Length: 633
Image 1 (tube, rainbow, N blue to C red):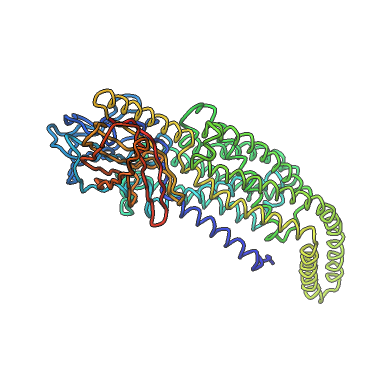
Image 2: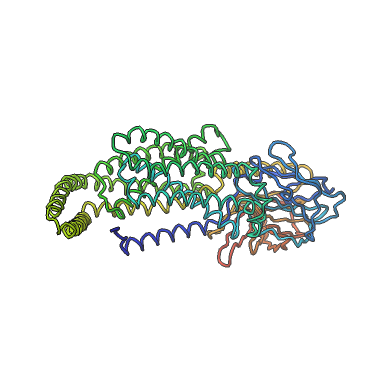
């Protein structure tokens, strides 16, 4: 008889799964892993002559499709011609029609970064003079919507399946070989294989729509699927499916021929399964490492094998923990103390490998201490580090319960052979009585069932086993949340990339403003702000042209930290000349397009060091005022 999980345990598991679902649903679309670092024409600039082409520069190489770059006129009509092309390095361009009329033009882009994640955004520039535009770019995101949610769910389930498959098989083969004949353990490992296979097929079908239109109807588009198979991410998913076929053979041997062998015959087969299983598990881990974060950036040749070791350590620890939980809650066969101790040693080694590889990965993806708190990747990484520390703390408690349980398990195992001899004696005496042999056999079976039930009750009542169950269950609960955070982390722009993009953009903006100042006396001010809301950080840029006494053109641009236009409800500007006690002079600019406001004929009464204060409101209640001084006139 299989013991069912108590209602309290079932409720805890459901709450943990709900927490993970909340993490996945609030993660939003995948953040850009390649950031836009420059463009020609630059964002917000007013050019006298219409350009022949528009070019964009990213922080790393990206993959283009026919619709990756678009240029839209003020009415929303496309004015680009031909296909996007590579200008050189990480710069890509698109030709535009000649003789574009004056007005504000919107450039939109949707590309795939080198680490397989979609990147989308938009910006504006003007020819002759700014104008109103009907183009709205606030909804231009990549990897969002239903398809984005399904893709995120598929990623989570693929990680979960990999962990259960690899960790469960490692637990059986390396720690508890008797578990090969335990049905719940077999169902666990097979379930991990089915989950990983199903999730991989789902990701393969969703990939084309996820990096393209985002429409559910495109999921079964065979042309898109054919294009996906030619990409690095598609090749990784197909390789994973092929390796899963080899994993199916491994599972059939582990729970078939291996379980039926005698102990001496198992030795050679154990060695063969260990070698083959390690190769397959490393190949599965490499299918992530070769197509995602580890495959791009600095030291990619070192980062990919380190990432493989990291994934294998996670799977061995958390997957083995899941298998131990099943053995403690669902298995009728008592798990030996030696098996629990072996897993404790394996888990310790996995944690050491996890910490070592995690430190390297953190340095590689962040690059500076400030990125821990200044980037979303760093903030998520801090959450992950906290969860790992909590998991290690609970694991330490489990090790204490393991030591106390060891003596109890030894005593139970010593009593088991004696009870088997008694049962065998009763069965033999029943057979000697001719006509009563069937009745005696039935009584013997009933007695054996009663003995088994009594042993289970005794085992379950043991406070040491109860304590180990609770601590292992707590470990598993933290592990589920940790896996959800890790899934979100893999979809977030690395901190090093985000900071490099900010630095490049700041350098480009500084160069542009210096050039403008030298040529026409224009003044450009960049100010970071944080309104304190859930989505309240950004950068506001104020341009005054020609920055002299009298009438001036003023443009205000509001962007997110990653450089995308920020669609906010309201912007106000106030000018104060403290030395002459003039001001504040209130200016309410008109909204031109997403993230762009403008005001014409802004009167500056006299020259001086003017304080420019900008009030930014990101919601009904969240607003802030930032200021900077500028010499005008």
